[in-house]
Length: 83
Image (cartoon, rainbow, N blue to C red; front, side, top):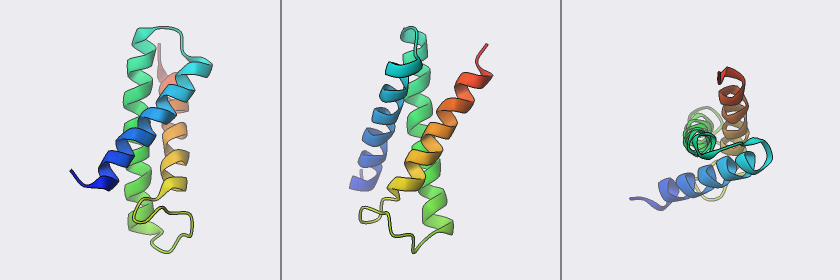
């Protein structure tokens, strides 16, 4: 597994955990937030890699800014759509 994908998983988990600490209520929410955080970060990274190749806020090949932004947007969206 390349280092970039391991960092995507770790930073996505961190985003989900931080969001859960602020807005979560139970274990079901924790699982949903962790999964949404990882998926959002991966989508943000891939979008940044595809559309914003020369964006300055990267860590090597990892697009951190875009990943964190889309991760938290996906977490807000998941909470908004949750019944």
